Length: 496
Image 1 (cartoon, one colour):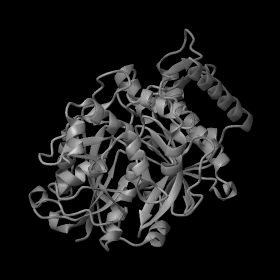
Image 2 (cartoon, one colour):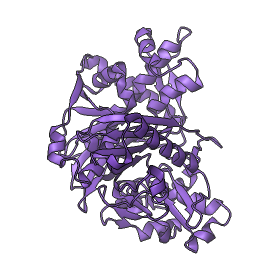
Image 3 (cartoon, one colour):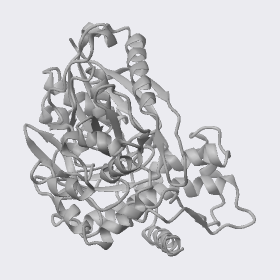
Image 4 (cartoon, helix red, strand yellow):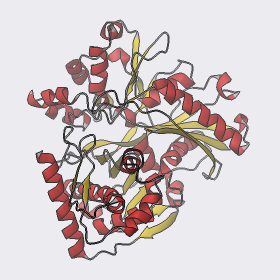
């Protein structure tokens, strides 16, 4: 058994990537699935779609590689975080669609939590803010809204899980109801300091604790797959939320190491070691990974719209046919036009945490066209990343230990234009690894080292490979002028 199968269940698609004994990807498959927007600010998935596309891609990856299931030592799972699924314990049927992390329907409840003075307690225990982003308020909404759900939950007939739990339940034929510490830490229900579900917060939200999954290390025994799925049972031995898996895949194992992942959203994590740093700048304190029962903490900044802004250009405005078109358009943009896009399509994440503001564009002229829109879209990702790094530097007492290099990964890092602007606006080098799909790599390593196929942390970190460094080229005065214009645009957006 020399291969590891990594499941990467994301916000817009499910993927499976097969890694060999050298941790090299040898085959991958991807399936998009429908997004549902039943109301303004609401985002849902059909849980059946998440499961179906996961199984299809796993089978396709094995077929593409020509690798038999008997060669798979273990499965690793990484997933879109915070997305909430509630299902019937007996039938396995969801009681409602999965409510996606981007969904803002619980904004009023979160506002009431703040008004009633509960946010301080939530932050102290969970490291999170009272925001619709997290799973706890989504779960409460389902229990309060779906007919009979709260009564069934009280009788122990319903189960809750983030997407990893839903997939584990399905893969094991309902034998395992579990999650890992990184996904638990994103629910707003888990005490990251005591390492257990918080009775206080579950009581505040009126959530029966019997619904909650068992919390395990990122590398652990998550059960065996049903024999009929792959022709033989395969152990599930690694689980981590997508951004934590990317942190692992980038080998950010030392305090001060920093990575940023660019997918649908953008998420920057700063490893703070065994210290759970309390943010004074509205960042999140979270668990980066947990091995051998010991959590490693991180500061995290979350941007809701990164790659999604390119999807908007394609599907909303229809000014591009594929993502790669943005690069040539951005190059062709009129340099005299200072068009700024604040992509607050579902509100703004860190460090603003405003769920009700909406997107805006500034600096439009009669000559503004698709090229300027494309440039503004790509630049918005760089500007938002700088917001996060400014806040991290202010929070981290050992800021001198923060590495003056940003490791990047995710689909958007394939754009040289976007990565060069990122280096320019940050004023620091940006390192792009050979394997940019480090989310899947992190899940694979967690499972592989648990299965005894892959090396430990130190050897894994030494084998991390750089593909290209983007050095800052923008003059400092131009950098600060551009960033000041962005800050003014955000202030104007927030004031509406």
